[in-house]
Length: 204
Image (cartoon, rainbow, N blue to C red; front, side, top):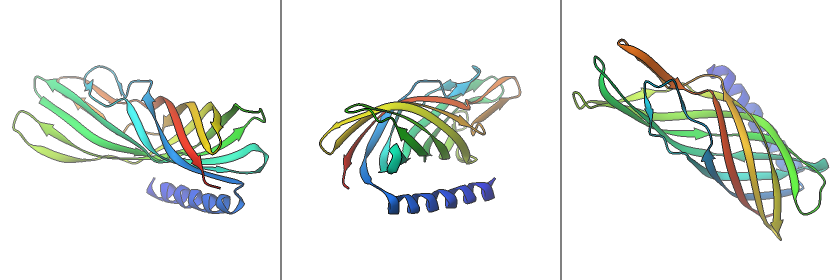
């Protein structure tokens, strides 16, 4: 999986470099929004994750209505659980997603509807705290690979652009796996929907 992730990252970097050379426009800005779906399956653990997502955005306009968007999206996630034998504990982590999307804008004046699809690696870093004995230890989360599809509209005034969109991501694995010897467990959902709005400034 690491080899595949490295290959995809190198391929994405090469594609991005070539796209910058062919760019007809370039916009930078920020993107933020809310998660529209839950982040845990089953009911053995309680989610304490933030529903927000926020990060920088790069939008490259290409000929024929095509474009490439690259984001770095931050989320704060976590859960709490309590079982008779396992004790009471919680997890808190920082999640970073890096969507790399190919976009197509319909040739409609003023408001430009678009569709998008692409690939997103996800990296999570966090720790688990046990209330029973007061111990805390770091958790090694696997890197996830996501397939992203979405749609939205883009409009603006002068160089300012506003792009609300709805996105769906399917992850190849659930990084959070909670198992209990005395009852059912819980895990991260592999299906994620977000409502996001990008605000960017056309610099080229």
